[in-house]
Image (tube, rainbow, N blue to C red; front, side, top):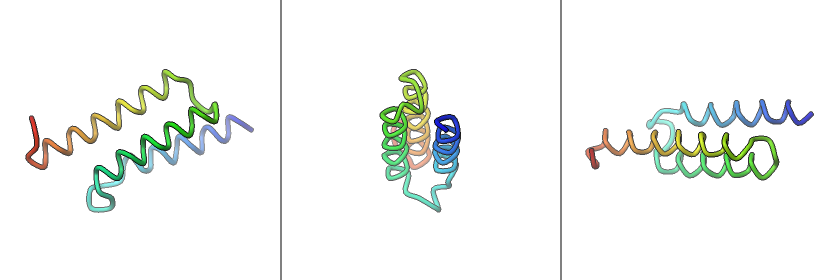
Length: 73
């Protein structure tokens, strides 16, 4: 049961991660990704190491978006 929940949660996280800027504001997407990662860790669906990797991926995505939009970089 928990493995099925984990797969569904990770799939939902990945689907959100791959949405384009036209579909969702980058900052909104970043905070939603963090919230989902937190929820998955709290529910014991992912380990703290997996949580850290998801948060890093979300941060790199936001950073690359900021650079594309003329931010630091």
